[in-house]
Image (cartoon, rainbow, N blue to C red; front, top):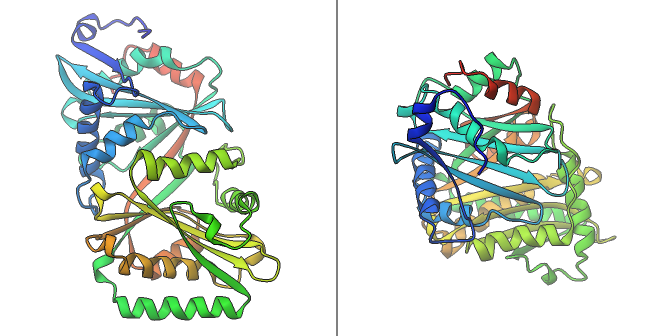
Length: 374
């Protein structure tokens, strides 16, 4: 690894950054980073049951995907694991951008360690990168939100995108009432000329004459119609290879289960709406909501609400999810329509994630200064 020289030689002597070999599931670095992720996770996701460390093992070993790749680093001081960082590189769109995330445990903050760790891993950033995207998650374990403070005060930049994460307590729903609403909405959709299908683990062929390409084209329109706010993001490209890779990541590499509910126009066989959730056997108390969307030409029929209620009814009545407690979702803070549906489904705000775009030149200027004590 390339380590940039800097002035604090004593601190450098006691500090070490180790790059993870994600191909090795027995790499002790993987286990160390996973433990740090559990500590961080428990401090941020305050309304979620504790997540199994297996979830983080799988995350770290699933770093190479068709659409993107990750590089993970373990940060040590005096042989103690004090934090981790990762880069996420895009392979299809936004190739000149990357994601940077860094976590230092609270006890070691404000000791110049983040600055030094970033200096150590700077050489791993490819030369073509123009923008570093940085996520800041509300920090509930300390009153010192270092990343936000650094970006807004030192660099003078504001978040370009805000994601609101919400949780719904599955144990508080009346199953009979939810089933009644779901059945009524499904019947209304049928009366309006739509068919609705449930799919498990990507077995889309249960839909008569299913056309994967047309479904992904519809999904691409939905994705690219979602609020980007002020983020400098290109439109998503969704190919069969990319979407199959996502499905395989969930059901093969993460050993999970993936459910879709899809609404189709009965007359012309166009795909109108979709929603999907997934869950893991080692983290069975949590159900993760993924995409929900309605193609623009089919809005106004209540299909978004319909597929969400039908999915909730499935979650509440499937024997595999008897121990499920929490339904988790994230939406752009500006997506008022979806947030209103979530309010109806008893979602409450858990935490907020802020996304900043930092030009690489400003990042390098920060690293070159020795007085940055963050």
